[in-house]
Amino acid sequence: MTTIAALPKAELHCHIEGAMAPALTRAIAQRNGVTLPAGLFSGQGGGYAWRDFNEFLVAYDAAADAMRTAEDYGELMYGYLAGCAAEGAIYVEMFVSPDHAIAIGLGFAAQLAGLTAAIDRAEAEFGIVSRLIPCCIRHLGPDRALEVARLVVAEAHPYIVGFGMAGDELQHAPADFAPAFRVADRAGLACTVHAGEVAGAHSVRDAIAALPVRRIGHGVRAIEDPALVAELARRGIVLEVCPGSNLALGLYPDAVSHPLRRLLEAGCRVTLNSDDPAFFATSIGKEYAMASSRMGLSASELLAITRTAIESAFVDSDTRRALLARIEKGEPT
Ligand code: ADE
Ligand code: ZN
Image 1 (tube, rainbow, N blue to C red):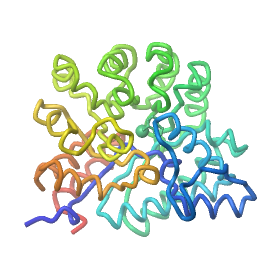
Image 2 (cartoon, protein in one colour):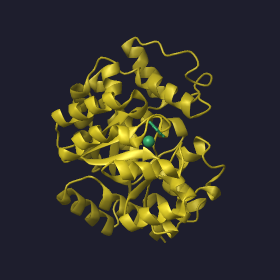
Image 3 (cartoon, rainbow, N blue to C red):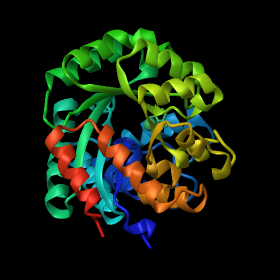
């Protein structure tokens, strides 16, 4: 019998700034001489303190603000990938926010240098493959998003495979960001956008109507509109589902209420992801384990989810073929 721990795994939706565990944030802040805001953590040695989505975004910004150097981003990325590899992940597609690097005076080119060096080191040491999706931040507005898209295209790198948008889904409309996504799309970057997380099905509908996206970050609230679910299934738009994040943020009261299984049964292409593992007490291994133990997915259904992730990853075809071959061989067992 296949154990879930031994299954090959892949994730397409994780934010590097959201992967920084409190202990690392403290260490990085200390060596950079950065004073973290009082109340960022819940007590001595505790996790990040936040009560709702908006407080989460504030804590996320404060943690990211501890970093200063390419090495900070590199240490974070290398450690994260090492942990994923230990849990059986063969591929991680990582969101990275140029706005956060600019806010700390580092800049996108240096952020990218730190991340790509870590990706090379992790692949050499653990065999895990990783690629980057720079994302704009929705609540910073369409003009800023367009600037970020231009910056990303100007810094072309083989590990930059996509363009995305995170941030507060309740701000602005997807169509406002069409110019930014057009720049990315025309430069050959595959696109994804957060939608159907904090806002309902209409947000997913608006996003797929206005933006050239192949995937949706989260998208779970599409379940509120059966016709939309059918359209997502028919068009093969992949959902980057993050159950642990959804439970932590209170979208659903428990794993049994989470729509992952219903989306799968409706024919949607779904993947499993950790989103902001350091904030939501999760990891890619824990997401697979929860889908197995609390949502009733079988090992073969979970393996099919890994296959979907690799099939819909924004990688070149040679890398995709090599990763699919590893799944068929049953790596990493
Ligand atoms: N940025 C980091 N995590 C996010 C999430 N879950 N939703 C929207 N923006 C984010
Ligand atoms: Zn996200």
